[in-house]
Length: 235
Image (cartoon, rainbow, N blue to C red; front, side):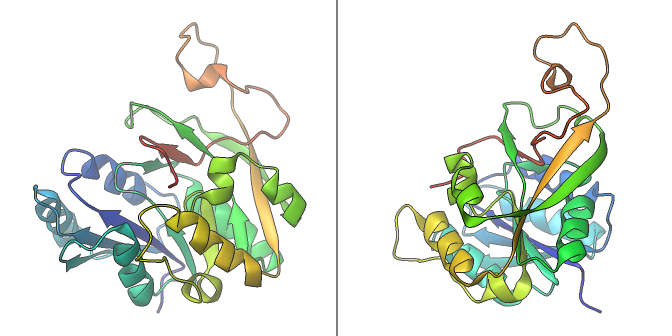
């Protein structure tokens, strides 16, 4: 049986960051997923890290190619992805443990083609995520989508795609930048329904100025980040 979610992870020279990324996928509260990891001809130990994780977890699939760029790596993974829904995760980024559960629940609740979430940039990928208490899944118009943070608008990350929509488009391998924007706009041009997921979280008092628990700690829905990005999330 096909997994519910395929998460596509392109990898190039990320030996020191990969473990945190893959562990965040393994920590998902929804276990019905596969990770399609493509090593893009890394010159460090990235491929060995991927193979070690795959040896311990059959849900992690490892593909290898000669260095051809992130677009070629993602396109190869798209061709091999088997999940009903597809998302993209960079190899130096991590996910909130409820990402798959909450985004797929939204996707299934309204037969959407794309569900949009949010992100936060950080230097500490192992900082604990705050728990989510509830989420609000709602229709999103095209105008609302293009009013979002430009990083979210352009990036292939921070989204869950229905497989048919995701696999109908490809990343342009001839582009040196802007490949995410090209891909996302291809998908949106055929997507019938979009949704966004807003979340509230349980609040804990803290005096730590750097703690994420100090931010947006309220009962009303906010765009709590599901993706935690170490580097710019789009090109």
